[in-house]
Image 1 (cartoon, rainbow, N blue to C red):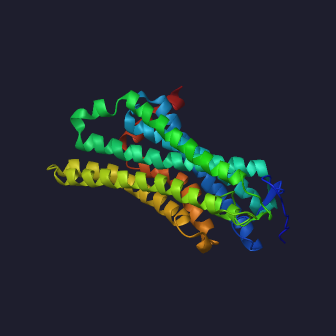
Image 2: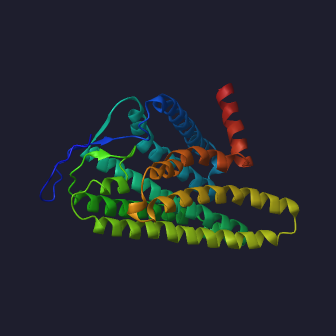
Length: 313
């Protein structure tokens, strides 16, 4: 039963929240616990595996794999921000302090925005490699790649801070969050004070961080597609399609779920928000290592070399 608390001033009187979790049906709690535990373990192994392969194999130290390394690190971090706390909801009442909730929200926003721009950088890298191969070493030099990642992290930090600063100015009069994590829409529903500024910030931050990367990625892959169709060699076309096809799948999956979740009226939100969030916070980080490596010869070679070294060491 919801506990209502009234507060005055800028400080919320709610010191802790109760996360209701994914479902309230008792018969589903245990099966879902093991399902998401399994997904989380696969996600950790997959992303950590790609990180280790990148670090141990110098031939993977190229722009493409540098961004893939950062994508795996980001997926590893933000799934770890969400899933462990989510699993608690399946076995007992999940209580989270106000400070922990704001911390989870900050890192969640930071890593999600990071992923938006890492996927954008990966699309641009493929454009440079396929459409401008003679200039690739210049346009995607180590220095430029490092600067791109600095820009990615700056955008993530600014976006996350914008949400947190606005959220800390709210007064909460209810402490039950109808979600398995501290996300923006369910938190706004608990506010006693106006959420107009918060909703405006959501539309601006999410709009910018979804629209700009999406357009950049769309333009990049449109140019790549037109270039691929001009390749005379069937083998060359097949290789280019296989490389870019996996990127397009991951990008569509991620941005589609984000747009559905945040770029809609807050009155429309409900239990379907939980399902939408699962796709880019839990399922996405699990699938990305396989999407980007399952047909990747360089990763296969690196894996074989690493396994041989570990076996014969």
